[in-house]
Amino acid sequence: MPSTWETGAAGVLLLPSGRTLRGRGLRAPLPEGPLPDFGLYLQGAEPPATPWESCWVRWPDFRLPADGPAAARSLRDAWERAAGERVEVACAGGRGRTGTALACIAVLDGVPPGEAVAYVRAHYSRHAVETLWQRRYVARFTP
Image 1 (cartoon, rainbow, N blue to C red):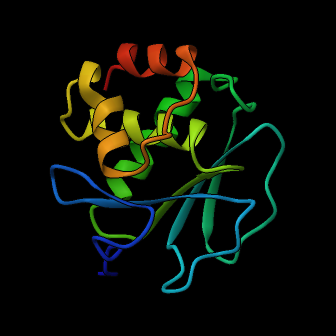
Image 2 (image 1 turned 90 degrees about the vertical axis):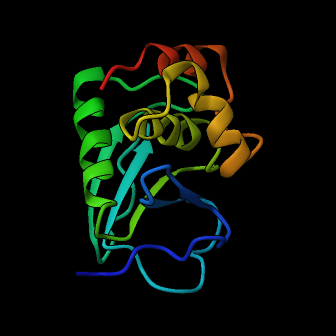
Image 3 (image 1 turned 180 degrees about the horizontal axis):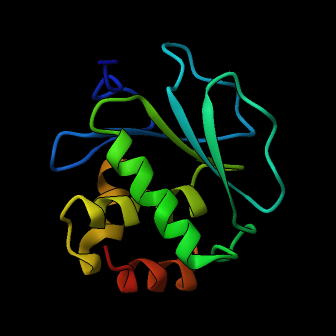
């Protein structure tokens, strides 16, 4: 089974279950270290191809996913894969959409929806989840 991301590494979110996910901004260079086994990419337009398996969720900047049920399935898939694979979640900047997705994945991991944004801000980036709409999306997210 592949190893998970190194805990304590920049951009790596450690969930209460012990699963880890790397969040990042696609505008930045690929971080050093192991490549992802799977990437979940949150973009308004299809992202460039990667040498690892990936999924694209149409999610315009500062907005919510274009297809909520499909996004929820992709978030669940990322959470399930994080049990034994290196999973990367990314948007252009690595804050709003990535933070929102990571907060929803934290809900899947058992963090109460009303606490998930604070959890991701404390353990991933204090700038995560940028808009009121994104905060509401997390608060209403149901596993």
